[in-house]
Amino acid sequence: MLEDDYNLVFIDRNCDFDEIPKIMQDCVGKNSFNPVWEMDYWADARWECMAEEVNKIMDKYEELYGDDDFDFYKDEIREFLQEQIYDRDVSDPDMDCLKNTRKWHFCYDLNLSVDDWYTLDSKERSALVRKIARKVKAGKEHYAVIREMLENSQDGCLLVFFHSDLEEVITKDSDNDFQSVTFKNPVIAVVDYVQGSGYNCTLEGVEFTVPFDRNGLRIDNAITYSYTDAICGMIDEWCDSTEVKFSFDKVGRRPKNGSVLQQQCDEEAQYIANFKAGKCSFYDANITRHRDTFYRNEPMSCGRVCPHCGRIWLD
Ligand SMILES: [Zn+2]
Image (cartoon, rainbow, N blue to C red; front, side, top):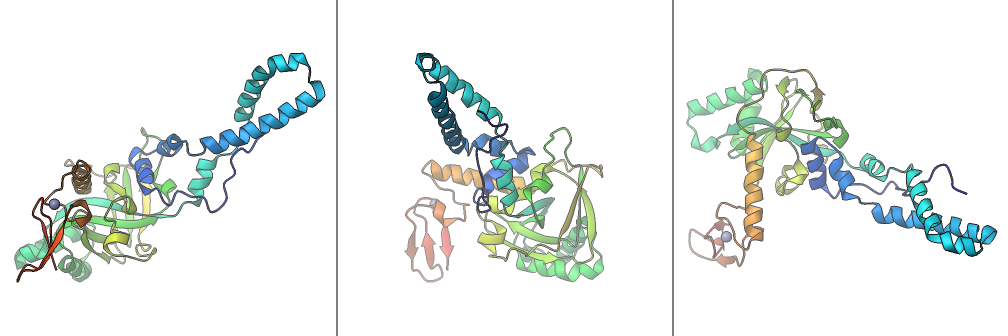
């Protein structure tokens, strides 16, 4: 009476993981889909559907062979059927859901900490433009756009942005991870995720390859002040010009010091922890993580003030 296959959980096209970027980031960091499996998101649905199938078979059984023996072995039969049906379940709702999930905006850390343009003298400014150009193998013809990006951003880290499916960045094998990554026509940006500032530019015709470091790869949307939405409010295709290719070929050495982006994310995690512990942090620009802020109307310093740490958000 058992079927060969069961499809216990059916996923329609509207079902996706778009709303859980942090779990998706967890997959990126671990180079594995385990964080998705571990959610065990469909356990209830699978159980309900299995129980229904078991009941159907039990009813039929009882109708055909129902007697005292059947009553006696009822629980054992039920258990046997449960196991059998679970074993024969060919549905893969997690994978189906991943296929329906949106492309993400990824940023990759080029491991260059950028100083605020307006604190530099003209020599230092030229040196910074050249340094960034060298990093991404851009020629002199790109100096002007890089300059423009620096004039409009504050200090932060230098990132490349691209738009991709989650599956593209995961090898599912920690012993066999990507060794290098190549970007073509890249959209680069200087971003400070903690203060929520940044500016980007596109380098047409530029192509460069860097060693791959998984710690430097992030889903923009998994960061509280996402560059795409919270900082800039961009359209979905804003960084589509970047072509990205991961490779198992080694090039050069991975940077020794930790990723700059990682430091920013750690800093933000610390602010969140402080806030959860009932405190706040003076250097945390996110006003929602300060309590009892009030408006102070004083000449030269109109703005909101946090009475606990003293931070001011000037108008
Ligand atoms: Zn505060």
